[in-house]
Amino acid sequence: MKYLFYIDPNTNSCIFLEKIKGYFDQYLKNDQLKQAILMSISCENTLFNPPIIKPKRMTIDDVVFAKQITMKEWKYFLDIENKEFFEKIKDPNNKDVCKNLNLLINWTNTFSLWLSVQILSEVNVSKRANLLSKMLTLADNFLRINNFNGAMEVYSAINHRAFYRLKLTWEKISKKAYDIFENLKKVFAPEKNYVFFRQTLHDASYPKMPFIGLFMTDLTFIQDGFKKDYVESNDKKLINVEKWVKFGKVLNELLACQYDHYNFKTFSSLLDKSQPNDALAFLVSGLSSAPFFGEDNSLIYTDDTLMDKSLQIEPRK
Image (tube, rainbow, N blue to C red; front, side, top):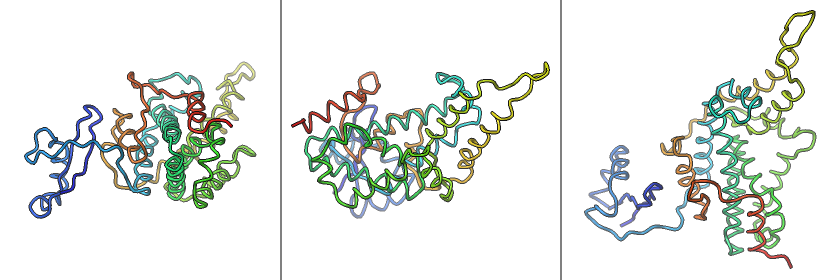
C-alpha cells in the first residue's frame, strides 16, 4: 500500500490519497473523484486508519516544479493592469491601485529569499551542495521555458555575500551545476545596463515571463528624469511627449508578453492568490522544510541573518 501525503497548511493535519491495487485504483482514474478523496479523507476518519506520518520532505520533478512556479508567476503577471505601473512609480506605497503588481513583486522577493534560506539552513555540507545544485537546475529550467523572472529569483538568491564565502559547498557541486551558474552570471550581468539580458529577452520566443524588476527600474528612471506629466509653453499646458514616448517604449515590450500564454497544466491550489504563503509552502516542500515565516506570518530573515547563518555553517578560519 502506498500513500501520497498532502499536509494541510491551515491545520497541519495529514490528508492522504490511498493507492490500493485493484479495487481502489479503478476509482482513482476519475480525476474529480480523486480530488474529492484527497480533500475529504483524513487519517483520523479513514476506514483503513493507517499510521499518521508527516514526511520531512516531499519531492517533485525538477521540470514540473519549474513549470508550476512559472504558472504561479504568470497568473500574477496577467492580472496586472497598465495603470498599476504608473501608479507604482509615482507612489510606491499605493496598495489599492497597484494590488496585482504588488502581489508579483512580493512573490518574487519572498521566493528568492526563501531559496536562500533553504541552502543556509542545511548544516550538512553534502546535502547543502545538493540543494544548491537543485536550485541551479531550477534556474536552468526557467531559462529553457523563458521564465526570466524565475531565473533571476534563483540567481538573486545565490548571488549574495552569504553564499560567495561557502567554499566547501561550492567545491562539492557538479561541473554541470557550476556551468549553469556561470551562464546565469552571463545572462544577468549588469554591465551596460544589462545589455546581454535585454537582448536575450528581446530575442526569446513567446510565451515568455519578463523579469519585472528591470522594467520597474527603467520606468522609475524615466519618472525621475521627467517629473512632470505636462509642460508649460506659451501659457499652454502641453503633454510631456518625450516622457510618454519613453514610457510607451518600455511598457510595449513588457505588456507584449501578456498576449501569448503558457499552457502548462497546473495544480489549482497554486493559483489561489488569497493564500500566497500556503501556495509557497506547497511549492517549495520539494526542496526543504526549513522554517521561513514567523508566527505573525512575516519574514524572519534579513541580509544580516542570512550572513549569520552562513557563518554558522561554515565559520571563518
